[in-house]
Length: 358
Ligand SMILES: *Cc1c(COP(=O)(O)O)cnc(C)c1O
Image 1 (cartoon, rainbow, N blue to C red):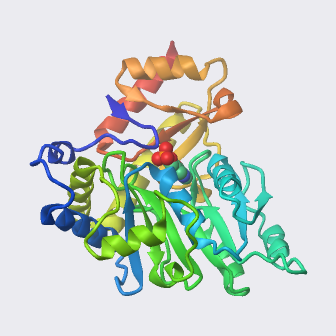
Image 2: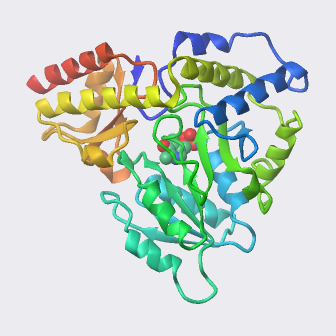
């Protein structure tokens, strides 16, 4: 079965087998070597300077990394403006609500890029309620839209606002400009563009941002996790086998040419799917130039429900992904992350062709 959902991804045999290495106690030096290698390799994906940036690991799915980032990096006296144009933007607002992080939302259509003018106006709001932080989902997996970090960072730069990014489904493949001085942190996960298994996630944060970190959560306390990991320590029992897989996936990633190579490979597959489906009359929901290379959403062909499409493709060995909520009636999603080949995509397109001609 090939997984075309946005994580977990189809693994390589090498990563799958890496989980069968010797049992490790997480209080032994062998585990800390593994943790160190994961942290070093995570920074290396974007050539980050370890004196400026740090990768903080946690045993949990991607949402936990986003939660950890928001709960820590908006200081007690801070206020965050959340850019919402999909499910994951909504989720960030819900997280801030639970932790009582002072926040407001700029809610846009899920089919449109964020409204930069409205964001600028909110950042400039008179009075004492000015946001200190802006939070955005880089790749909004709801629709496949890639939000323009550069444009948002420019708004932040002019106002001394710090940018917090949910990069869960873009980190490792899409371009992220870590030279951008307003960028404070990016939250991401092992099991999307990095091709590890679910259960480990991380925040890449500027060390300077941790100096003012709040401590609103116990398990996901980013400042404490960072401090202990820097001391070759860990507060809790990590998912050791998941870390084995993450490190192996990062070794493979580097050997395959790193981020640029992963981007090219995804772009090739995403275009192969788009062109092939277009030939069958199936259109994209978001224009390719506004989409990620990681996942694209497509309009359901007339007269076919998602369930019919899904079940027919699953019978041919492919798991596609529904739209979220009401979107399941109008669109479906195809991710091209994971251990896939151009031949796999050809077989997928052939399956679509057979299905539509019936
Ligand atoms: C997958 C994803 C998440 C996190 O999902 P988990 O199920 O917690 O791993 C968060 N944000 C985005 C943009 C995602 O695509």
